Length: 282
Image (tube, rainbow, N blue to C red; front, side, top):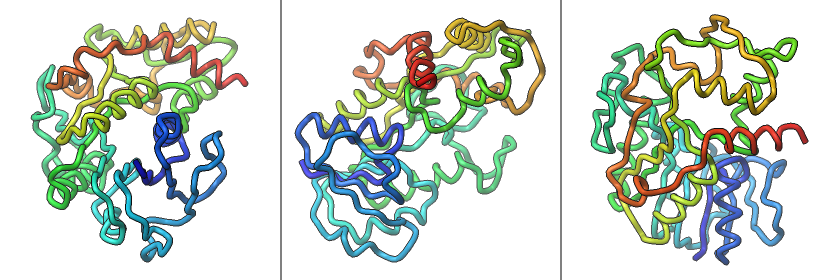
């Protein structure tokens, strides 16, 4: 296949692009700069900005367009200038309402308006509006909703901040919770890549919760401190990365209605963090 990846040079996009190359596909990457790109040669790079006027170099026909970074509905404007057969949009579980009960699947209630403390132009709400437009424009699209994505080459700096900003004297000062029911949910970027590749290879359509494992918040902190070989001490912090200030178990216990996701053997948190830490130390 000839595949166009919008934003294909960092983290999720990079893993996907490299996998497409290994599978023998012809890959074109459309992104803002070439500072981060797949290691293999032979990939066509088109440097540009999706929010600027139409890119004249995107006139080829593509079998698949993978969109890793559409943030709001207007980001889809560029698609009207590109000819492609199939479309995969990477969204987020943040499109769901914080009020949903535990264990919901893809048909759970999504954010509606600005309730539950959601900002009028907040991340989840804008992604939800973008999803709506994707469904309207491309009824056969695949919409992927990952939970928090972890793993090597994570460019979000969440794990880096935990290590750099909250570690003092070989101790991780973090909000250890007295509420043992507080959980978080993550998926390793390599697992996410494999699942997306399966969606593409089987030409599946619709929405997919690619959410991985649910772990206790305190277990996450303990695992991080063990991997980094540091102590753990309780300290209140509203700005701690990955700290769920909404305490919504619904958003942290999502499931999928798709068998291939439910039956997938996800990477253990310890392995995901260990591989990230090993890459971070290089």
